[in-house]
Image (cartoon, rainbow, N blue to C red; front, side, top):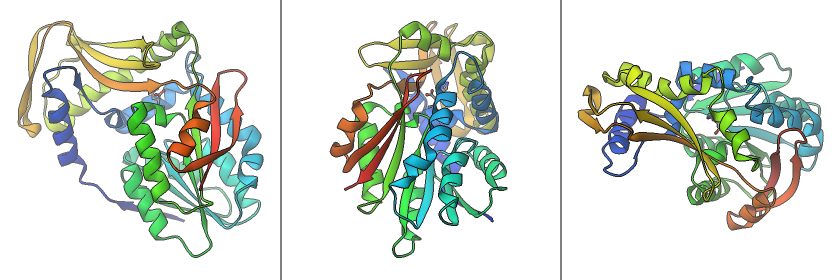
Length: 322
Ligand code: AVI
């Protein structure tokens, strides 16, 4: 069964956030969540197939190998809420493990309607799974899931693929606290974190030879042109991926190749960029394996288990709400 609720007014919010990020006098920035329109979501699926980008395959291997063990400690009945489901491909293993014990309701929560639709298509055929998606920001969707739970039901929240890494570290922990506040003791959060690796390997992963990540990044300007009527000329920008060692993160930027002024009519605003100036579009923080154990108590959880991939350092950690 498929149901979907829409909880946001996307265009107004997009215009406001673009204006706020590009009117900064210091480092200009755009929120990375806007990378995922239909084209961006499709490009991210291609990124996950690239030989240089092992993250998604590592995450999938862990879930395929360990889904039974991961879910075994959570007492039924369990409902599953996934924050940023993407295509939903990896989630299949968790849902199949749960449906061996019980029919399962699955709530993908996605700001991207294209990703939500793909996720629903991908998982619709699973037996004993009901899908009720929310087109919403993560916490708004999760609150709806929690408000609808029946007495005795536990919630398993999935936050896979190291999406936590796209938050700065303190806001990331505040976000985990926000997740905890919507849950009850005994509910669980499965948290994916990409682990530290040598900088050259990371740069290759975010500046692939084929240019797919460059297209993913530049597509943000295409989206602003289409949805907000802006006049960004893509030939005047290039994709940059750099490793910020003190912050332990990969940063994606769009670098202006010339001094230019671009008008964004639906945001009622023009942005002036100098030659070489960048717009920061995404951070991808990397973690040490012990960090989820340290972050858990600071946000109201306890870390009860961790699984690490042996080919591409990546950890899935199971956090229980205390
Ligand atoms: C979704 N997120 C965890 C990806 C990452 O690695 O930060 C997005 C991505 N950006 C460039 N490549 C992949």
